[in-house]
Image 1 (cartoon, rainbow, N blue to C red):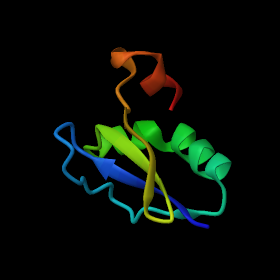
Image 2 (cartoon, helix red, strand yellow):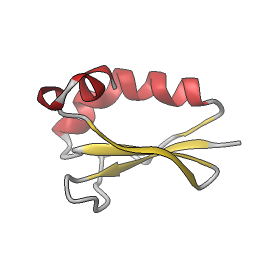
Image 3 (cartoon, rainbow, N blue to C red):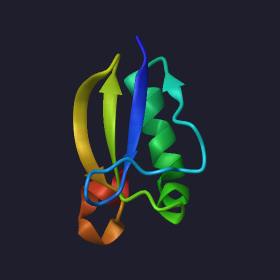
Image 4 (cartoon, rainbow, N blue to C red):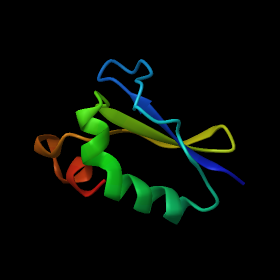
Amino acid sequence: MAWTWRFEKADGTEAGAGTDPEDFSTQGDAESWIGEEWKSLLDCGVDQVTLFEDGAKVYGPMSLHADEGAEGAEA
């Protein structure tokens, strides 16, 4: 199983993040990574992210903007 993030602009179009999205072996690893990297992703123009497991959407889009609620701040 592979867990991946899709990096998106506010309108849902794919955003370049300055790095290729990583594949993670667990959902926890993917979520830990986004928790560490969300500020850097914002700096690269990413507004929101969506999590996929083997190509199937798990959840999202989830905003990375801290001022839009606790969900984005805790990402």
